[in-house]
Image 1: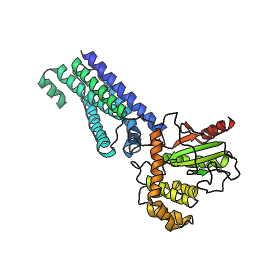
Image 2: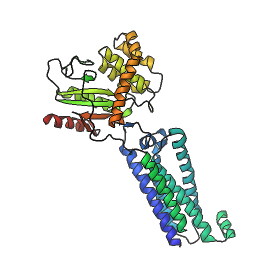
Image 3: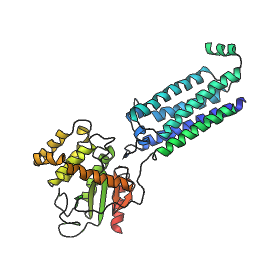
Image 4: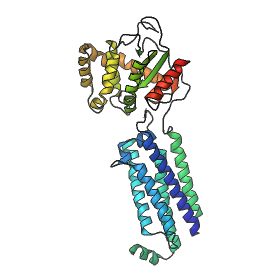
Length: 148
Length: 227
């Protein structure tokens, strides 16, 4: 049971990594992209929100997923995931919500590759949360984990 | 547990395909087989055979001594598009380096993303009516940063004065319905053919992928000349 969920999380993190890496490559290749009528990926990927203090968000995302993969492989504990993992995924979810809101409310443009990585982060977050409560079983024991 | 994973997977997959089908591909490109309108005396053409700064031509093929340029490069562009500005020096250099090349500019202002796309097109057209399309075209591209994010009308009137144009006629032409109509019709025709981004280049009527640099661009033209 534990192994199956671990594999799923690993696969999700890998998928997230390849998706972000693809976008990172696109970012550094398309130095001057053509201007398009349709407000889709080009608009999102070249907007002023696509970099954070000079670093492409896609690159940050790639590193984020790498960190997740790293933590997954390192930890592999029996009683759920460490607070580091949960904190990281929580941060990821918060950032994803912000980036998604930017697409909806400011850019009015959507890039499917960005949305995919945001959904993957959400899935990882939900899964790791769900796993924790199902593996532990004892509410008091879970509370103990949080207080560490 | 398996149910959870399955549901989430379906959600992700479904949403992804939905958005992907609504979106165009990440790098926009027109289909390969586009039949653009023939070059006519309504077009703005730069050709070695003509006096510099000529706008339209007195006759359809029009070069002064009757000899046609063997290769025609048509560019659909938006004056506020950074990619078009990046290609501007390349296209200019091509037209001066290659004697048998003529270049044609066609309007494709992306007004929904560039607020001064239309007015800059109008300015160039108005200058063209006084015989100085290419001078204005060059000035507009060179100074793209100065006018892109501000009230541009007066800036363009200023350019017209710098080019020794009749500024009253220029201003009137720039804002006339006829000018807007020409530009809009040119763009709508292009859209109907499947052109959806700028710059879009056609070499002797054939759509080409935007070349990586000057040498790549030159090679395409020279290959066409060799045929």
